[in-house]
Length: 126
Image (cartoon, rainbow, N blue to C red):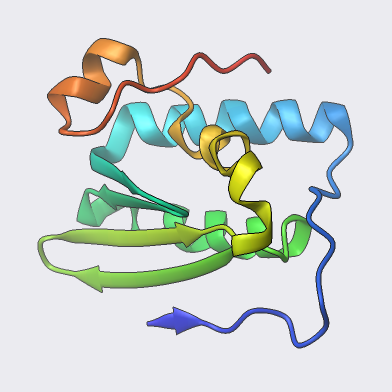
C-alpha cells in the first residue's frame, strides 16, 4: 500500500544527528542480515523483499525513516510470501540517489548482494 508522503515540500536531507544515523544504519544492517531475501535497484528506486516474520520491523523502519527522510517515498506491501518495500528518491535528487539509498542495503555484503539478485552493495561506513 502506498504510504503518502508529507504534504509539505521536503528538504532533501536526513534530519538525524550523526550518532542517531549510525545507530539507525546498524539497526537496518541487523534487520537485513536476519530477514532480507532480495533487493533490486531500478533508477531512483530500491525494492527490498523481507521474510514475512519481519513485517513489524519493516513497518517500524518505514515510520522512522518517514520522520527523518520525508523526501523519500515508501510503498509497503505485506503478503504471505514476504514483505515488499519500495523506496524511491525524488527526481531532483537523481545524482545523490545512490548515497540516499545506500543505508537501506547496510549489512549486505557484495557477495551476498549478488546472491540475493541485486547489484553489489556499496560499502557503508557508519
